[in-house]
Amino acid sequence: MNLKPITEIAAQLGIAPEHLELYGKLSAKVSLDVLKGREAKGKLVLITATTPTTSGEGKTTVSIGLAQALVRLGKKAVATLREPSLGPVFGMKGGATGGGASMVHPAERINLHFNGDFHALTSAHNLLAAMMDAHIHNGNVLKLDVNNLLWPRCMDMNDRALRQIVVGLGGKTNGPARETGFVITAASEIMAILALAADREDLKRRLGNIVVGFDTEGKAVNAQQIGAVGAMSALLADAILPNLVQTTENVPAFVHAGPFANIAHGTCSVIAQRMGMAFAEYAINETGFAADLGAQKYFDVVMPQAGIRPSVAVIIATVKSLANQGGPLKKDEMPTADQIAKGTANLAKHIANMKRYGVPVVVAVNRFPKDTEEQLQQIVKFSESIGTPAAVAEVFQSGGAGAEELARKVIAAAESTDLSKVQSLIPLEMPLEQKIEKTAKEVYGAEKVVFESAARKKLEKFTALGHGNKPVCMAKTQYSLTDNAELRGAPTGWTLKVTDAFLSAGAGFVVVTVGDMMLMPGLGKTPAALKVDVDTQGNITGMS
Image (tube, rainbow, N blue to C red; front, side):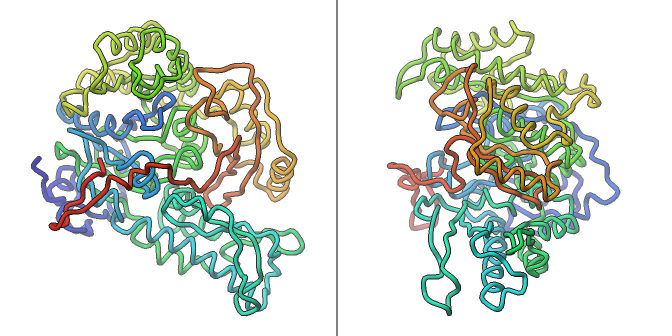
């Protein structure tokens, strides 16, 4: 592997050195000034997938491999990816920088403390929490109701012990005793704000709109009233700048922001996407988990705010994901043709969902080492039988060379797209409960929706406060189209249960939790952290 200085990678895009803030030789932050007077004319390729297994189906790896393949075919391309969170890095999935011959580099630095962005976000979040508590302690002029505070603490780690805690147990000098908790940094509203902000001015406006709680008269109190916006913006002054790195084949990649797709909106920053589209013909934009999560939220949450319409959606399918949806697949069990055939119902549902947004679809069958040619072609033939072009991608083993057929089909689809026909499915003017029901029935396949009383009351309150026209961001399990991780395929006749709702006024949406979703994950019995080490020379191992 022959990595180039990041200044050379920037030069490939036409970005001059004066617009770079170097973080070593291999990464840099890019000034927002590069977008001044420059139109984002490139095409956005939205990467999504079928319902995944616990180890993931390789969306990042395929995104990188596809960008490399497009460059091999003479196109100017970049990858636009999310920053990894330490939660999954040390939890279940390990590193999140791709794999094999399709990675972004410097991989270890991207996976750990990447240019300080997550630290800045965590600090800004916790500063607001501290200033809120300090305001209450020092007279509480805003009359915040200590029993109706919304703003938790956060940290970038899986830690179930912090989900629900009690603070203020040290008497009057330490503030009133109350219940609160932690969310993982990727679930912080500030992460969503950073990812959706158009510029510094928009960032400050959104930060000011964060609702931290309610006063004793039931009125919302926001971060602007607490006086925290200036200091929070200062902490985020560098974090708002997209990070430029390179792939294994020296293709540029913007890696910026990292909201999860099961509990947030699940794609990299709008600023990074615009930079990618401004300096390249194709921006390959990864969205989290399956098409019912990251992709649905892109079309119904991100697109209405950002105005960026994808030219094509690429759905990644794997032998193991479809076999698991048709099975379930037991550990180390070899998938059968029958399991794969049953699992294609899941693929068909995701394809149908994407086409409802007016975007053309291409299926990428991501090859894993134990897959047979017969298994791969079974998925290709099924996709083609329902009118969707498909190609096998061997990007882990072969890099861009392994995705050239996929790249040709993506180009053909993207160049024929009528962007005016790419539209959201969920109208903003629709009441919140109806938005939830429409998403559940038309995207997930539910027959009906039930609302727990606490969730319904919150939705009614948010509407009364003037937030009924905001999109809903569904917090749902990634392991099923339903709200039950054990239900496979494309179930029908089931009921979705809405358990809670949270107002993210700064991000511009309402988070709706369904089933047993939590905003702070926990570590498993054998977390990926057990494999990570560093040698005497400082070389980090065990993160791939």
